[in-house]
Length: 516
Image (spheres, rainbow, N blue to C red):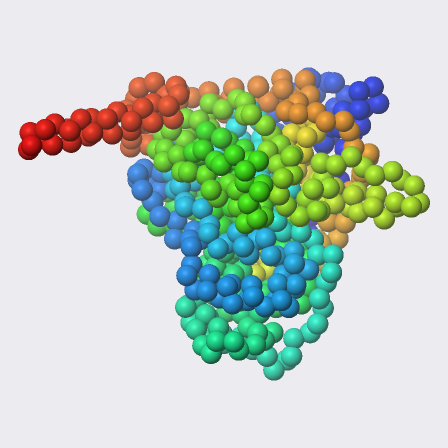
């Protein structure tokens, strides 16, 4: 099995204390330019560059059946367990309480936004390839949006072997068979596991029906599953791969399988790309709201922009700057472990050695490139997705150097090991790759900064990727494209809507005048 480890270095320059994430090629721009022909973004595989495009992109409306929506049964069940002190205490100890709360009201989906964004997703590197550079969903983003924290208190009580979860092939059956009918009945361990199984399948995996094996849910309950954020991100990457791969391999297919929890992708897009969402409540006001537990809760309040595919695609095809690469830097919400990441390091003195160790371990967790693993049924069939934070250094407030990928990433086409039957020894070998990371002391704040080498090299790469006429691309992709100017597409769209409303209002007033 190929070694997928890639140790990242936070390079600190003594002259100005700037933190650089990833490899540094000593100011040799020519050496970086030579990498363009072998740079593993595989830009030819980006969906908008394919010669044949699936009908998925040609339909004005398209339903992603696995998207999470507000669930009355889940709300009722949560209301019962949220009043049980032991259950709430366990959720908090396991770092799940914020994420579970977020799932009570997932955001309303914007399918046209999903379809446009996926056109720029690289399944080889698990990043968005955009004119401004590469960006990706990181473990830091997952912590900010969901509030998942690494457990500080682990409950390792074994479940009673006789305890079982009763459910059929639907979430309705899972609820009916495990939620008590009699009011006031005590909460049992089996009910707690059943609820986690409902939540995990419905909102994390976003499956049409409960998975038949509750192994993962039981592991979460007993505190054995401590890397839930990695599972969430792995499955999100997997969902994007599922869509992109289906479009590539079956371009004429009309249907599409489960797309994973794209509702989290929508929150991520709304956080970084303000043009893709409507207005939000004032942040200072939201902080006073006790129900705002994460940035996910806050962003879920955003009004939908209701743009067309053309609007969104035009934005991503032309975007060369955004207000901030660190939308969560103020740390108004979220767990303590997430808030550590943007802090200055504590001193290394003996009295605070534990605090310094915790700080460095948290940073290494977010900044180490590795393969994320997920076995949804507890078997040896794994989903493997590469995690490459060096592609998004600016999202960690670090200077973006040339974003080299691991030389033997399992996402490269020649490996084809996204789901494989591995031996126990091989599984442990892959997990061992996650343990090493060189770490250097942090840096002073630098925002939206890239190295000169990266800027020159990426501009050359972008000129090749985004060289085709936008109108020609949209003519193949979007039925609503009229061939006109694509500048300020969102503003044009909103002006049209406002104009239509004004015309209808005038017609209504004329009708009322005529009648009376």
